[in-house]
Length: 420
Ligand code: HAM
Image 1 (cartoon, protein in one colour):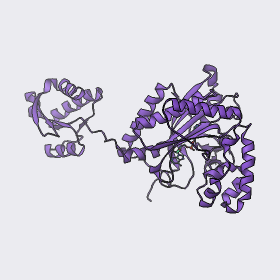
Image 2 (image 1 turned 90 degrees about the vertical axis):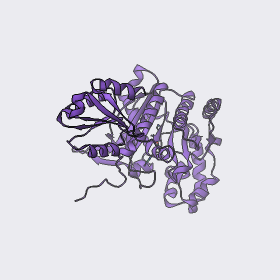
Image 3 (image 1 turned 180 degrees about the vertical axis):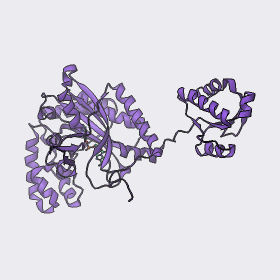
């Protein structure tokens, strides 16, 4: 029997992880400067946490969740996104008691049973960032700044920031009624799914990729015309904050999101370089969600970055060259092997990547191994060199060789490698 990863799931191999680590480091550094703290919720939660927050009528809840009963028959789900879990934790641990506004992030895998394609997986990773407890609009702008700044630091150009307002319970129903009426008159031109959505969740029609539906929504009413004064003022303030930092954006009234908890600000950052899965990240405000999940009436806003999509973009551009060993110690003879083992331990203790041979092999074989590992230098020590107290240090790039005093070899190498 041959075991392989299941469809839509994949191994991230050692050659790829350098980029992942780079992203992780940059994200953590940036988020710390903005005062975000890490929260690590479990991957498994009660199914109704997600159905209640994301919405029964969404594709995620209706078709894409990995849900199953546990041994006691309770329905559990592998998280399809992180916001619901972060909000659950905020309520469960009363994080708001400690500080009214919580700035949190979490990084890890999410699971959605979607049709796999380029940039779309069934297990994928997100960097999820949330501000819970602040009504905005400054926190809206700050979050968008975090997202844009992250991409800028990664030197990802050619991205577009799209912003919309999805209104609030006061003004969205008016838009919904108008849109439903508009779609009902054009029902024959909609795909089967959208004919159903036109009643249950009409905003979702904006997201449909079927040409007929795209044609219908091209002239659809704009939610921006229906915003109440408070939502309009909020949106204008977000725009002003972004403009004050010179961040350009497109106001796009057709931008909707695949999750039902959003109110007011919704945004996405897209690129042309990923084919149809063009969203690098998406997010928005969810002012009713904390209350809906049983907490106080606190507002929230957040976004999540799709890490696989970011890795693809980075790898196309400036691939991180994988790290290589600073030193390989080629030892010949039992006494030299023992010394090599000790020296390697001392240098590794200083954070230097050192490789040694694990079995007694000749010099040629060891030099071949050092070459394959792309070690920067090789220290060659046989029992004779050990007795004389002089080893040979070879620079693998220039091929230059010199003698080194083995009594002080750790200090010498440490100095050379750490402060070249
Ligand atoms: P989302 O738009 O569903 O939002 O996902 C955010 C990002 O995750 C997408 O823009 C995309 O880059 C990535 N992504 C989504 N599905 C897949 C997939 N199947 N394969 C690869 N990447 C994928 C959310 O998840 C919200 N929880 C974001 C949020 C946080 N809103 C408020 N706070």
